[in-house]
Image (tube, rainbow, N blue to C red; front, top):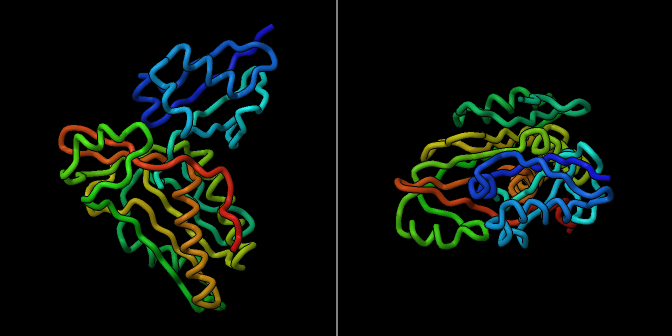
Length: 255
């Protein structure tokens, strides 16, 4: 007896395999690691990326030993960028989005107006912009990064597993409310190409006092970069380099 699962590939893995989706027939009782092994049998060039991988099953992070069932979807999560719209999350003052269209620095005021209530005395905003200097290459991208050494980044290209990214942002928002007592939060992340100097992410936290707003905004950007399945490639005149580190599957320990 066998089961069939659908594997989704992203970023550097997608490029190496030449496809976004792979259907696999596995033995009944197979786990996530078995799906990876079967994928590597078909695409051996993916094997060196295993140490930096995370996995997801049906939209949630999963351990390699997680059992699979017929019809499951397995996402292979390469190093993340650390980056359909669901504009608001129920139960709190939250705006969590992946946007394919550009936005300007004016988004800070736009989000502050949308989130703040009379009791809020503090608004803290953060904008992440495309810079010309390169970042740290993802594992396996060191040789390609060396080829572009000394060159300026011309743009960034973002790719996201949107449904899981939005779920992760909602989890981060819940953690912020629990840790800092802040429920007025926005995290807006771009997808697609972001040229030099343009904004790739906006974070706004509103609270009664500045300390909580500062803490919430910092936590939001740090955890988004570390956990959300959003991938970033730095584009140069004659190529690109994928950037990032192995995804963290849960929150950083509270101090």
